[in-house]
Length: 218
Image (cartoon, rainbow, N blue to C red; front, side, top):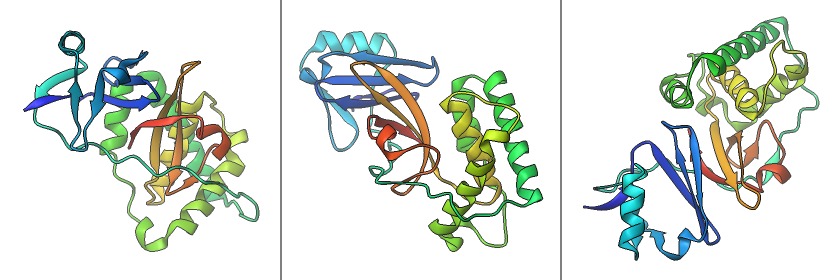
C-alpha cells in the first residue's frame, strides 16, 4: 500500500513540473516545481518527500492510498507523419467518413470528457474479413490517408478533439485501433490530442506533436 494516482487521474512529469489530468472533472492541473517533492516509481506508485503536499493532493482527489494499478501504456515517440499521396477514395468510403464525422460531432456535443473516454475505451472496432493486426500498419496508414483526403469536405468541423475522434471512428469501422493520444506542454501550458499508430502520426505533424508530452493514450 502506498500513494497512487486515483483511478480517473493521469499524470506526467515535464522537467521540474508535474501535470495531472482529472478525467472526471475534465481538468488539467499543472503543479510548478512539484517534481522536486514527488517522483513516479516504476510500479506506478508515487514517492513524496513532503507529507503536506501529499495530503493536499489526496484532498483534491488526485491521489489515494492503495496498491499500484496497471497504467495504460503510452505510445513511443512519434518520428514520422502520414503520407497521403496516391490513395483513391470510393463512394463507400465517403459515406463512412460522413458517418464518422457526424457521429463524432454528436458525441462531442452530448457527452462529457469522461463519457467520451469510456465510449472509446469500450467501443470495439467493426469486424472485417481481416483484422488490423493481420492487414498491417501500411494498410492502416493508407486508410488514414483516404480519410485525410476527405476531411476538408466533411460537414462538421472542430478542434483537435473532434478531428481526431472522427478519424478514430472511421478507422475503427475498418478494424483498426490506432492510439488516441492526449499530450500536454508547459510554458505556456497547452493540451492537445492526436491519433498515432506506432511511431506514425495520423492526423497531425511530427513537429507539432513533439512539443507535447503524452499523458494518456487509449
